[in-house]
Image 1 (cartoon, rainbow, N blue to C red):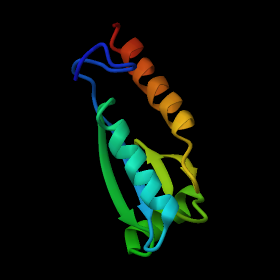
Image 2: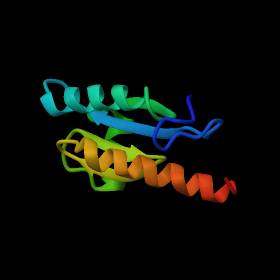
Image 3: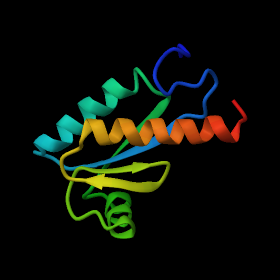
Length: 105
């Protein structure tokens, strides 16, 4: 990844993003597109989990996700419902900045 990309770290540990989705969900499709676009700018590992699956149901209960789409960053609740790209970018940059500080960069 190019180090000139905002928030990018040359050998950054990727942020694991879990997207809880369901069928016939326009906001889920929008969230997936947003995450795929952001993955071109930030070191992300994207995983989609169907909310109706056992794993999806368990994650939703654990994190208080009432409806799809739900987003977890490194296993921590971020949001559910319509995803704000601006809010997500700020959260990604904050995580990457914290990693940069922890690494002494």
